[in-house]
Amino acid sequence: MSAALTASDRAFEDYMNAVWEGLSGIKTLERQDAFAEIKSHLTERIEQLHTQGSPHPVEEALAALGDPTDLARQVVFASRQHDESRSYLPWVLLRAAARIARRGAKGLLAFLIAVLGYGAAVTFLAAAVLKPLVPQIGLWVGSWGVIWGIKPAGGTGHELLGEYFVYASVALSFVCGSVCTLLLQRLLRVSKPVLGRPSS
Image (tube, rainbow, N blue to C red; front, side, top):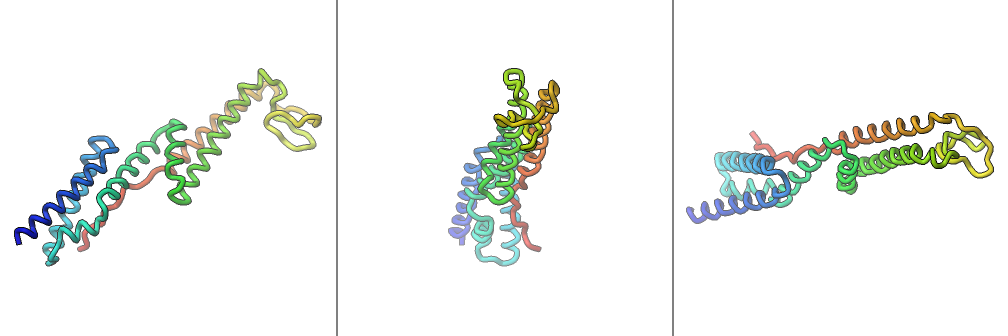
């Protein structure tokens, strides 16, 4: 009987050691909190299974929680996404969006918003910077439609904004960047892995 208990204790310790090692990618305080939460959950679940008469409560609780490395990886991923979703730096949000692009429709949507939104912001800003060097850049309207840039060669039309084109381009760049940032912050928020709650 004691040998079985010793084996169970060893299995519990091995599991928690693997979890601790897997949590090395996050801040120390978060790592300690996550580790304590997982350990508390397991202890509670083992006690409940023991009360219910399970012959192997430790093994059953560990199996229900899953592979310790995968569990720790989920916690680390959620922690990083949470931190990055609070950033206002485009490259941080773009990197986070790229990381989750293959995790489903929501991830792909976040990545597309990042590319299109920040791409538009950079394009408008580039137009503002180039306007003094290339006077042909502007908001052109003609028989070929509306163009924010350089009108087609040989096309006829007129430029609407004139000297205000630079201000309008900078404003649009700011709007595109800000809206993109807010949308990404919302889309990148993820919930931490939910540990199975002991049944009553």
